[in-house]
Image (tube, rainbow, N blue to C red; front, side, top):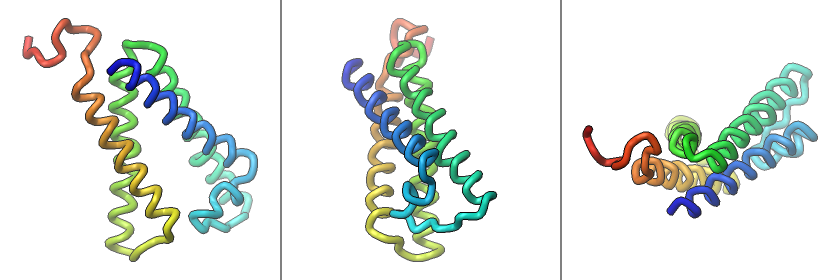
Length: 137
């Protein structure tokens, strides 16, 4: 499973980094599928920070998790929580605001799947500090 987990982390890392770079380049074009259109200086700053810098930072963390065995489980846990948080926020918004467009629903499905896989890989993964990950000692 180690190769599968590493591949999973690398693919997720590349997706986060791509989103970040695309948003740095042209925030409004990158976010057009989710219908964000504000182009004030403050809005562009916020978009580049959260959808640019933060996404790249998460991607780099996931790459570190793929490359360093001691960071694999922490990276999986972080991804499960962050992407799970995105999915939870989308579900709450659907309950409060109604159904978004198809692209956003596709993001919900993707984020839910990634969060679930990250959590499963994290739970099933072996802690490098212990000989048996499921031992209570």
